[in-house]
Image (cartoon, rainbow over all chains, first blue to last red; front, top):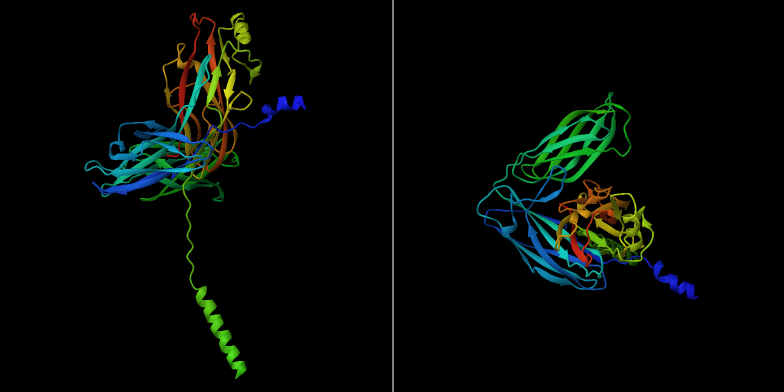
Length: 245
Length: 195
């Protein structure tokens, strides 16, 4: 019995130190220049203790690999007011945060800002080198200035590889969020695969490089690919050849 | 007469039923969800500790293992933590992502606190995918830096995804440790985003 008692602490599952949910996951808004809107986002704490959070704004862009990186271009942050900027989410409860967005009088296309809801670092014990991880949830906020949109998209599909190479270029001034699929046909015109794309963001003036991997690898050979994509601004199609080694 | 009355009542009842099932409003409300769960928030590398053993082949930070390294023949050695507060078996932290978004990314947003005397680049991280969606972006130990992606889904990332976060600390045999020893900490700010 004593042995069991001693072992018991080691049998306990790891307990979550942070359990935080954000809804919605992002905001995509459209306003005329000078227009104003108030949005509410909710943060939910899944733990039995309160969770103090702080808010920080940072402008961002997306790299060709889809990484979120800080960038002062297309900066929406000066036009965004978040209240409150520091608050506590109650145990097993929800807190609401108001985002007031006032569209600038100048500029065009889509602007962006990342709203970071950060938990406080947990105090670390003393001794040695300590790493404390301080997790955060990032709310991507996009605002498109209505009446200034110049949507455009260029797609290049095909090439060589086990995964289908795809290049999506956005020479326009608005965020393109693309959904669709690449349909793959063999030499006899028979469809052999469909490779889906869902809600993929391509930043204005940027591009994305992707490699779409079929669930089941295709046999070596040459294939014809038809790419059909759709965004809020229309439908796009492209065609190419794909050599699978 | 009675039969007619019954028939009339049946007709009225059916009409009434028909009217009550004429229109329905079905309201569907599906919120976007982006949820992060993390069990370990502190990783301790205490080279004066009595921790023993290895984690994935890396010796734990302890006096015994450190002395063995100093007496050995290799110039550098990656050490596993002596303790991981809240983590699993003092080895790793578990990161869970639950979302209905196709694309998401977990990265190091920034590194807070005064830089470590031996340099923040001595701290290495790697994320091991345990289950779910997306892929690790640090399958091999990688020095921490602001902007480093740990895990990412570019499509079909919906559902629950679980990653194990391992941190290591690199020691160099030429490190000159001050008389007071090194008692320092840094804060690694992780962020989950669905851009």
